[in-house]
Image 1 (cartoon, helix red, strand yellow):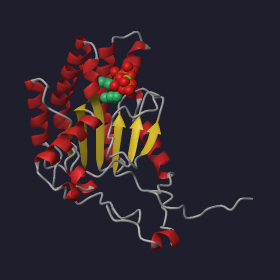
Image 2 (cartoon, helix red, strand yellow):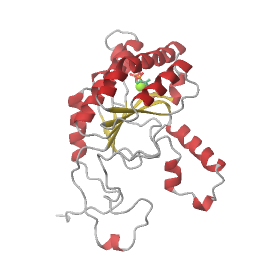
Image 3 (cartoon, protein in one colour):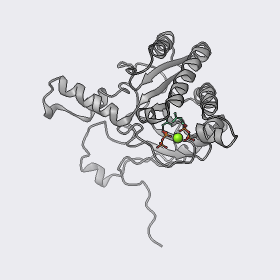
Image 4 (cartoon, protein in one colour):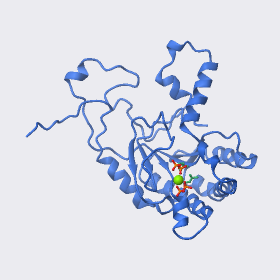
Length: 276
Ligand code: IPE
Ligand code: IPE
Ligand code: MG
């Protein structure tokens, strides 16, 4: 559902900032002339978040897991506002994975109900704030009512340009690659013509920049099938904080941490300290 024609004027990123245009093979010049390295960056253009820990947040308080999902879902608006204020252009929040269908039926139904309620409750405020809503994942298999709620929110906010908030719901990275391959094969393209750009263009995220920073809450150090293609060069940030407790200060802390990272994209470092 991502736009294929992203002409948003703000938050422009130079895709050649790592020295190479996408898909361009490095020439010999790159071996003798180290590319300039950026030790710090402006705010990440695209932050993607694995919103984890709702269940443990609730269990630690003796509450039902669904209460954790409610509190987690309420947090979406707060973090979206904070991300927009920090100058982030794209925020992608993973709310439900293709694997989460394996959970008990009551939990799955509860999560779907809570997400629908959240959309209905928060969409006007998000719209007022200039948030453009998108969805990645499959809408197939979701209840018709939720599908309608998602599509209505996307439609209402489609002209907004302050920040793009993408909800990853019924999303799995491998499933996304499978559907991309199916589309590419069905197009009849000559295999020799298939490039990295071809694959990117058939992912749900078509038209969006790859995430610069992937944040996972709740202390787990894995990505659990999130953005398997797009996250190839994302900086990873893990925090023990459970998602319902992850507030604007935590987000700003992650952005500050990102600013200290040295992204190299395969280049040599600019300064290599000689052994002492
Ligand atoms: C994340 O919280 C939300 C979903 C995966 C739907 P969890 O429900 O995974 O919470 P924990 O990991 O069990 O604490
Ligand atoms: C990943 O969390 C999915 C979302 C946060 C939506 P999980 O809780 O499902 O991941 P695992 O099972 O710990 O790897
Ligand atoms: Mg979890």
